Image (tube, rainbow, N blue to C red):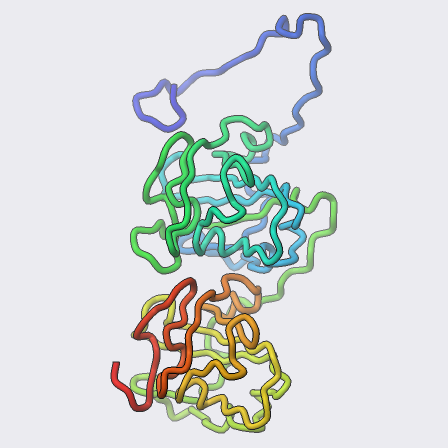
Length: 337
């Protein structure tokens, strides 16, 4: 028999003998629910392709979610109907506590990393939730740390298994997949309120255009809305600006800038974006965060990790990228390239 390879016998069972107890009392039943491998007690937190769903709540695996306790001992599940048999359903069992500021969503759909995340130390992998709860048939191989290659890279039950991973930016990936968190992760605590991210927040229906060039120029543009004193750009910070660029690379076609800190007096927002992208009162992780969609920004997941600045007349986002520098995605009113 085999769980993964062809030519196997399909119908079989294994048993243990009562006489193995040698007079000792039988252990209590394992209490693994019969339907634990269904999705009835799992909440979807991410989905792409055919697995995208309006019921997805990105916030449930964001920082501070009760479904992702900092103490560890929780489960995350990926389904991938187009993957090989062993990779169509994978359960990640977290063993160790999470370090401060550990980004769970980035680990799975950004870059699958070995930092505070090593097989057999920090986590175990299983091909079903019933196996995970029984503690049997854990996976034996994992690798990590290939930029923008997400879970599970080449991890497999017994050896490397290529092309079962997902990526938000790189080719060769699996296109249809979803992630879930288990209701049991709550450990009896009440479920958090829904994240209340509107289903259409990534559309442009609630956004006002303030600038446009080329094919994106529009008669509906109102330049004054990001000028000094505009109610759309509060001096106290805590506002969003969005750039669309249909000819940019996939990760840069839609970027959301989330301002965290107050604006200094006479801060020129338009100059920052279409003039010179500057580090003055504008540093990633301090003054602002960047995201590849408004839904990610509202959920606080998958924030970008790299930015540079201060190249004269090179506008937003210079070479900023989700995980490393990305050249030629910037705009400029005067310079070529």
